[in-house]
Length: 323
Image (cartoon, rainbow, N blue to C red):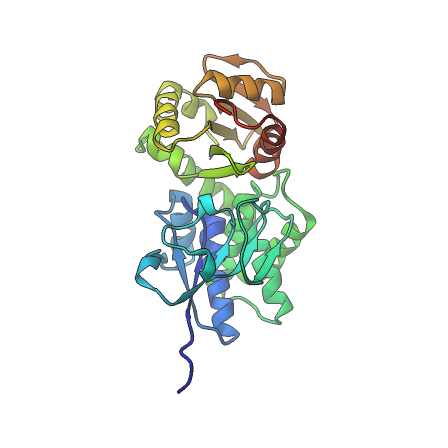
């Protein structure tokens, strides 16, 4: 009797963004085209910008991950690798691949060798697009549109400090199939994504929230809001600070941070829920806290401008409290 092939699921991180969703959809389609049927999943609800991109290119949103229901499965992690960002139900022994553009967390290890591809580019979708090229495949127009949307949004319209020549090359290659005004398309996504008027403070914080485990013992939560209307977001400062304090306690975090990124003026504003956070951020960014806000000049990238200095700090200082 032939051995039953394990079902393959491709899934991005908790609180998925456009890059996470596009990568899962595109890589699942590429694997299927190469003879390994794969299914994309999302870890939780998507944001308005991602929903707009899916609707623009006529793509159905993947189902939410329910991996508890599949005892025999293989999982491909895209756009993340750290266990604090995994969809609920993933078991490390079932992870067979990782495609990512973030740092490799110290808490990720496997007993068996697996395929891991990480590159220092602005979007995981850039890596997926390159894999299409390497396999002499061209993504369908709807897939190309999603990958392009993800590259443009993850690199802030190719202006982010994380953006590389490869991101630009892949964006242009994909647009040969999609044929859109890239700048206008990205702006539409950010306009939709920036409308937070109907969202609670908690919903805004957790929709782009990631947990990091620095030094194996320091649990750090970092939430981001990329917006073209930073001034309106900052008017809700007190709401955000209250929710940050609650979330820090509920999740038993050592450190909590919410950064509002002004993608028009390329500037950041850190909301700090306590004295520990204020002290550390002031030291790292040479900027003073004022009424719970610390201005971070030129800071718009969590991956390149927020996570590295915090990781370095905690590698030498350990936990901020109660060592």
